[in-house]
Length: 301
Image (cartoon, rainbow, N blue to C red):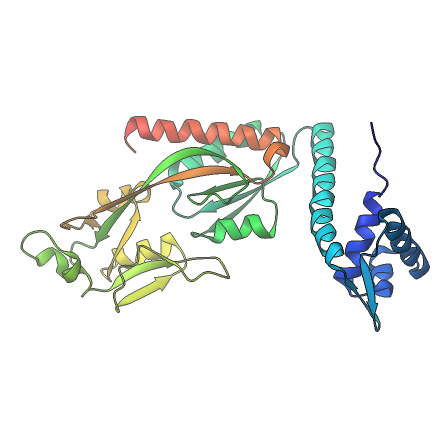
């Protein structure tokens, strides 16, 4: 088997020179001497047979070939780190902590029951839970490496299993003027009323969940806030059916009699943020969550 001539450390040094802005800065970041960094780059270029860097004043910039190689080397380093993480996971076995990112539209009852079922089997694994809305889940994957993400949006390149169907229902308080209408309510009439929508939690997105395009709207940051506001008699909203059982039982909310679009359905997925490196604790939690979601489907709630 042919062995690579260029080492991972050489590619790492090249990345540091570009990312840090120069040889001296790279040396500080890597805790190496500047002469060691310079020698590593010189040796890299010698082994390749052509230059990958051009010195421009005090800064080093990539040649065209260097740009191509730098992009590929980033993937190479990431794969190497992933391999080490996998080796660590296999060696350690049970994860000490699970980072769980959950879209707020995910049904709360099965999630809470799965967490309750998980605790006595967790072997002390800590759970760090973060709630997001819409593309906030994708942003969490892009910015870090959560163990599990529960979302309707599956970014390209991630392993995911369908786990539950979510149903949103158009609701308002029984005292809302819309219930005084004769016959089903059309979109034109609906747009005249205040709609409560849930803000996308991503820092780079301005999408709101279920917005009709009406001028009159209030934007909130959570499903719970929307539920409380609408239950108080202010506005209407599409909210997760799984979170409405108590409100329906107490008659603080009613389903709006719309001409169409009363219900909105979409799939939720269990997205494995670490792919094949997913640990046994995370897989156990997903199994318990799937059982609870199936039980909800069978029992109709």
